[in-house]
Amino acid sequence: MPKTFAILALWLLGLASTAKSDVPESEPIFKDGASCLFIGHSFFIPVAKSFDRIARQSGFTSHEVKLVFSPGPGGSPGRLWSNPRQRKRIDEALATGKIDLMGMTVGGGNKFEDYQRWIDLALKHNRETRFFIGVPWFFGGPRMESDRYNMAIEASGDQNFKTATELRKAYPKSHIYFINYGFVASELKGRFEEGRLPDVTKISGLGDEALFRDGLIGHGGPMMLEVSSLLWLKTLYGADIGKIKRSAYKSNVEEIVGKVTEYNERYK
Image (cartoon, rainbow, N blue to C red; front, side, top):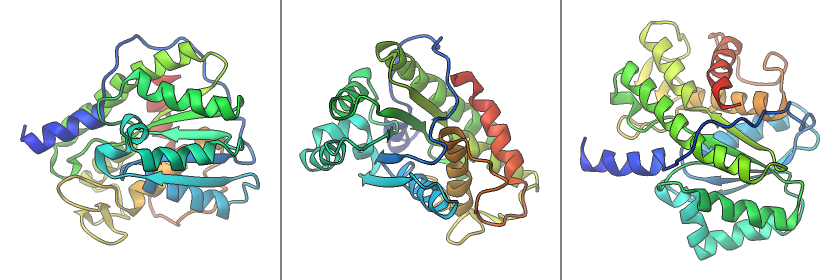
């Protein structure tokens, strides 16, 4: 594996060390939306932006979003905490006491303590804050064979879920959602290669019809970002994908979101 890919693999996969959680996942409580704070990198924040746009269009009256972005490993929980400027921005948002849901992603060799610091800070300002850990698709998707790509996404989810398990046990009164939305990318890529994704005509490039935005790292294209955000809306807000205002794709988006939701059952 090239050195650049090896470094990216380290920050995207993260590190963890416990067994699957036995803490049950409750039904979404944010039926009208939530005051959200999402912090992360370019495999996370663009999905959060799509989530915000669709939620606003779809009439979630209590929905609002604040975003803090930092590229690459800098968007991981640990690196954001060690960045004085970004930490101040996040702290100011949490200090309002109005954040209902704080979303973080993976990267930089995630450790339990990296999430623990942010959770403790958020709960200091609002004891009712809930948390969301989102695992993105693996890097290098445009150049990776589908089976290998899916295995990498699955392994990333399983490894990072170990940390989520620790957090759920350490904070039994604070609900922690966990979504491996990386499965959206592998599901779309598989359908594209089988000729079952009519909205996508090229694996990478600019424009709405590209699956990935670039051919090396594999940032998400428009459809990948939107379908990922629909998964967030279904999981976090209990949204009915058939009724919300979204792009009019030819592909069966409800079926795709349903399949990826099934893949995520392992993280309940």
